[in-house]
Image (cartoon, rainbow over all chains, first blue to last red; front, side, top):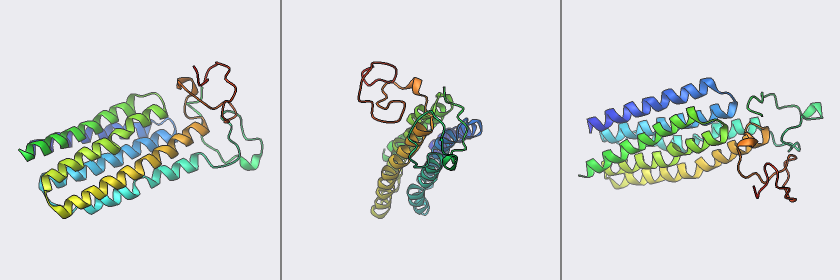
Length: 110
Length: 122
């Protein structure tokens, strides 16, 4: 079981480093959100693997909390990125300056 | 024997997370990165939880593990839906990479099919 734990630690460390690379490089806010979600999932997996290797159940409540709360960050960032206005168009700019709450850059737009 | 099975499940769950991280770094836009990101959120965590359940083998612990799996399966699609909708509405999702897009440029349902780029029959 120690060998399994070592392999899992190596794999999840690679996962964390690659997620941080994507969080740093972006290029958009939603890319960073997706990478942060994967990082949270990898952290939950690491906690579960530690509990499996050491064979204790004290950290299971942390997993419950992560499964319940982990999605709130991406939901709130998504609501911030796309406010629910009447402007449902894809390309054009908001004509009303009061509605110009979208301050994000469109680097990926073709 | 059960421990061997549990170890296999744990390693395969970690492997799912690693594959997803490679996909997140290498895929070109938000929607394809989301496709890679769903692997550790559902499949990877479920494999790890199955390995954990095989390792603990206690009824109360397995109840909590089933609860974790249910919560994860309930919340992951919600966040994925919100991020995907935000990506599409703000223009972060690249339209030229979509195979099927049933919205026209105004964000409405494309009722008249002109067969052009983004057409449903394309």
